[in-house]
View 1 (cartoon, rainbow, N blue to C red):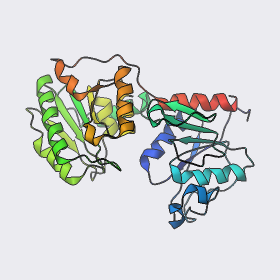
View 2 (view 1 turned 180 degrees about the vertical axis):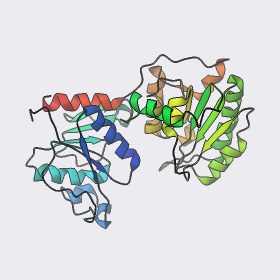
View 3 (view 1 turned 90 degrees about the vertical axis):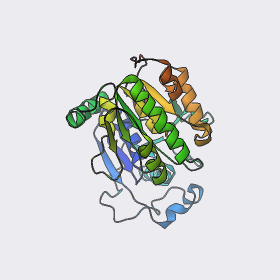
View 4 (view 1 turned 120 degrees about the vertical axis):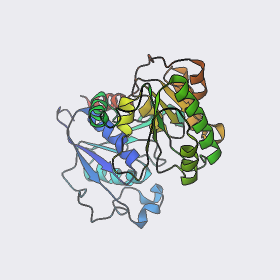
Length: 328
């Protein structure tokens, strides 16, 4: 694989967060890429150890079929993509280089590079590269474009602008109405203390009762801009681009990492009973390297001060490792 021009496929299933990780890596490589959209049938419920290397769990009617000519590099994320990329590897007679973001579970045979965060504590292996958080596509270029797109609509929000990014329930932990009320009270106090404005975004993982509790209990003297996931246009990148500080719930590796891509002060709201141990380890890493602080520490400063950390972009580090391994 010595040519400097590489063909790349990015697999895109229904999990947009996984897809964004893959796009971040593909764009960091700097080569054109094709998006191969996949949807699954009932066979996808089987464990990968039974599926092996196969396309049997992929619906055949998708508009971007997975057929030859096979690419030089395949980037994917999530357990269900592993049988697909292993089948591509075999069909290409080993030529396709397989990159998996996130630990997919066993088996990992045929995967050339697995990128997984330190906090996942995956055992060392030759095909493993460790990251701080999740790769993403929140680049300076994208942030600048989002600032242009949303600048006029958000111009009425006074500065300093605080972006509040709220996730919600995870597999084993819940973001409760009590937690939502606590967050609402703390963010309201902070906005008034800094005499700024607030931009709020909830997600599909936010329980409706928790969302209501949060929004009903935000009480500030200033303008509040609220986005809900049922709205068509999502200002998420606009919030990141136009904020002076970001407050994020600690239930999402991607949200914490994307907030840390801005270079702006990042504060994490993470009640212990709502936070998985692996996310607690991520938060500690971000605190220790000066990237983020617990939300409680924001109240120690009378005004918002600028940050000095280097923005996190694990996609670049993964792309560099891919190039090193394929000889570019």
